[in-house]
Image (cartoon, rainbow, N blue to C red; front, side, top):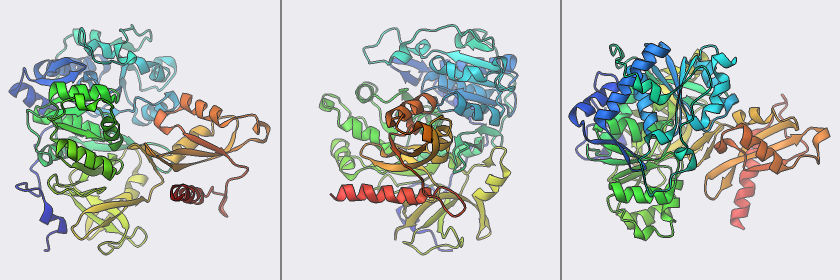
Length: 565
């Protein structure tokens, strides 16, 4: 059998496959805490949590989840907060209680959250104080989702140091406020009970985490991952990037998202390394933390690198500890990559993955990366490019849909056998996942993204599904029809544009700014249309469907014309 083309450029001295531990993900924390009890696990605005304390709090919280919430094997628990020590403690406590983590974007509003709570039938939520108001109406006691009977609420300030000269956002500094909801318990109260959890029952094939991904229908779908699939990309990234116990990761990409979850949390705990956590991007604080804690690795979206390198006084920071900078979600501009190379002497290493593959299925070899490239299939992973209509493999260099198979591929979509079936195909006698992304393979076996088969907007690495935004816009009393498309943005790469037909009685009465402001109040910030254009009619097909593709092509042509001018 002929070896894949990309094997010629495989990282030196690394195997083509990995032997994975036959354990739960929680066991990685147990090992790290046993090996390195006094070693730094997390750094949060100068507050340091060592591995011994981290495990102690995880276990105490797991015991509370079991005793107070009845969490057991396979029970779903929502995790609704920004990057913080509490996120990591909560995540691993759910696993230690043999539960099933459902990470939720902390930017979501109540009506967006309702689907997650109802669809997963979550029994409890671990929530940050500043966004508790969004989930509170969904608690069973408030007439919300019947299954959601418990809430554990924390203030980020509970894990801040006594003092720090770093700029800390107000929502992080906010003091603890006792929750008034009858089903809400303060975080400290749960830990103070000091409960011991029961036996750890979950193994490699038990449910581990269920990130939600949106689709063209507009309804987010839960991606079922086992401890085995999550373990694969956590270890794969550690080995591929030559991570060590003395590695220090800058954790500013969201932990609820699979990229941050794996690169900034699960990989870190597997290694017994350290992570510097920031709940929101702040380039000055990031630079200070890189210098202060000698950060060695940083996984990000390219816009963060662009912003950091534009810091006016960047020269005053010693960033020489940086050994690896990687990311994805959008192509890295070559000029920025060159500036980074001149500063640190390293290349930006791009990768590719989906919620369905719990982060990377592809990555560039660290010693031979290509520009604006997805990379090559990682350990134990196979990928092909096929004609999406005929399902036949295309020739090298031709564009087609990427299909993938490997240990990191999800089990299927939660409660949706029809979409699960549609997401997989039989090809060459094997089961492959259809990514919905269009790419080509070059002469070296590297994959290059060309377009998206699915209808999706990529705004600074955040995936925005137009149908989901449209369904929210239709709730506005003035909107008769809406079509959401992507438009070019110099900073975000792509951003959201809404083409709207107003109801007759509202024409000339509603401004675009009012629509945008309404959207800010009703949906996550990254989904909010940055541009609104009013039309008299939207083009429709013979069956009455809005022809979004025509509108998207018109917008692309307009943007290209403006760039040419």
